Length: 76
Image (cartoon, rainbow, N blue to C red):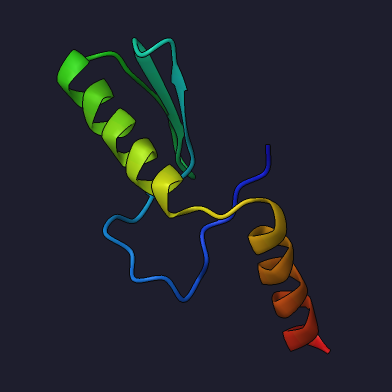
C-alpha cells in the first residue's frame, strides 16, 4: 500500500534519512557516508515509535489521490 504524508500537515515528528525495521530487532539506515545497523532494543523501539507516528499522519486511497493530483497540478 502506498502511503503519503501531506506536506502541509503539522507534523509531530520528522523522519531522518530513510530507515527499515526488520522484525522489531534491527533497524537499517543509510546515510550519505555509512550504513547503520541498529540493534539496541531501546533504539529499535524509538524507530518503531517514529514509524508509527509517521504512519498515523499518512493518507491513502481517495485522499492520497487528491493529494497527488493537487501536487501535479501545482507543477503545471
